Length: 109
Length: 118
Image (cartoon, rainbow over all chains, first blue to last red; front, side):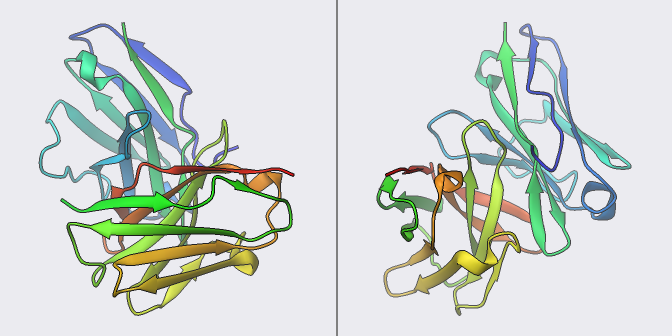
């Protein structure tokens, strides 16, 4: 069982929006402004898409947005495109270590 | 763009030591921290630990007694040794560059699968 809780799967049609939640505790998500999100195409290297809760690396589409409230962080993808189909996982710093969510498989219908 | 590539045996026997190497290209290892992570089948990622190019390291308390990391700046590589492996250590192992200040992993390798079995 992962330290952070994500839904195993979400789906949406092209053009729609989806949101992936990531729930932790006050010892990780709620205790630090150090949540990061990653996109992972199977067989490829995972890619950082957000860091420090809300910062987006250069080259990441602004169709991706994030929010955080208490011990829960959320990733929203708007205007879904076929290329968004991938696994997404969250991560948070937690004291002297890092903890991860189990990952969410996004299917674009 | 920095690239990372994991290498090592894909199979280890119970009680043996697992050794993996991560080769960094298109960037110097002489900056940032460098981490090892793993993902057991059907489970989420687990951070194993990280090492700075000077050799300073920090390990996940759950694995600390069995983990050693080292760095070879001349080869632009860093490595992982995990002793006394069991089936529970079966996983895809990733190396990644770690940005300590932002608490994130900004470049990753593709991962290498390791199976522990007799």
